[in-house]
Structure formats: C-alpha cells, structure tokens
Length: 68
Image (tube, rainbow, N blue to C red):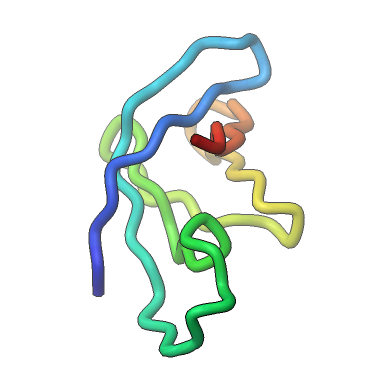
C-alpha cells in the first residue's frame, strides 16, 4: 500500500499534517484523496465514512481532508 502525507482539519479548525494509506487502484480517473483507506492521527487508525470524513473513536474529533 502507498503512504501519502496529507493535511486534515478537525471540526474546530485545527490543522494536522498526517499520513494516509491509499488503496491500490489501477484506474487513473480516481483522485488521490478518494483512494484513502485510512489515516493515522495520534497513533490511531481512522477509516473514512462514506462522506470522506474521519471520526476518532478515542477523541471524538471529526477530521476532513484539506484538498491541495
């Protein structure tokens, strides 16, 4: 799996630089951020919801990807 450094922000507007793991997708029409399998924030693996939001079960924070 590919690793990718991205920026996210939580519901309070705090920005984080984190690492995302991407699915292996052959299609070139799929955007990079749509391939994210999970992100790691404070050593917690967080999987996306269908809206590409990531909710931490330990902190309760909701993270959103900041598109470049």
